[in-house]
Length: 307
Image 1: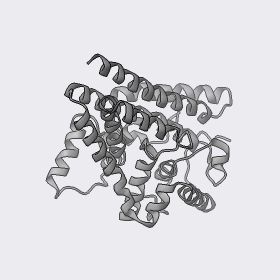
Image 2 (image 1 turned 135 degrees about the horizontal axis):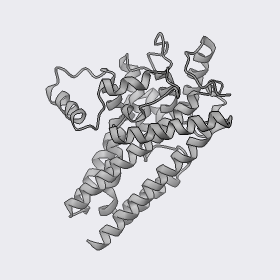
Image 3 (image 1 turned 135 degrees about the vertical axis):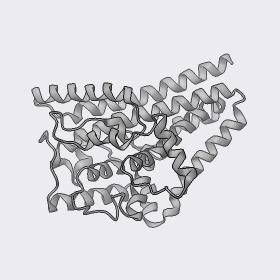
Image 4 (image 1 turned 180 degrees about the vertical axis):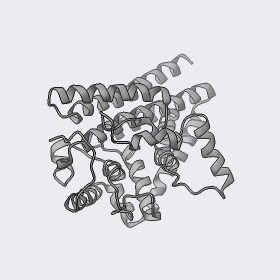
């Protein structure tokens, strides 16, 4: 049953959340490996390197490559935004957050638990595994984002190899047209936890001038939100509980207003008809994800044939 308000967890609920996280990780091959050996996180930079080399060696039209990368960044942004709303809808149903959750709502990637903890961390009770405040916690938060959003490792919402086959077929048959798209998507996925840590001042790079000004530049051009932009996302006193959904990832002040309106309208209607919000937002998120993937790849292949 939805509570339609935000609250902190009691001790039993905290333990249930930890049990859910370890259950998910135990059934996720990559996360399970990284809990034992952190070097597995190198998989994601290697994916970026592979896609960069493939794009450079196969695509001779620089404008097509740039356009493909931009489409990839837009696609991961939309995927993140609607996935983020879906997770917040799940947060309104506190009874779900235990090991039976997957049986009720389907596949749950590890970042879902990380996100829930982020909004229910009074006392930082799981800082060694789910929090930015310790080196280990920051590492697992980062890789839970990468595992959950990378097209090469994600199994949400489809569990199996269908998405991987889609990527493989496109990279084999149309490498020049699609490698840039997947590069933009994967690079955007890698930026997600970095941008979130940035708005919470959890990245200590003041002595690393190049890195600091690189991240500051991303904030300046609007890809990263500012701390002030993100503040409203942690204000739970409003009528619709949660707001400002894009400020946690790749930011867009224009999209944020539209997304907030979608959330508010859906929240209001579900409350009016006594229907659970996550059941509305999940199919919407899936539709957006696969529509943007399919349309982007189709457009790039068509443009490639013309060029």
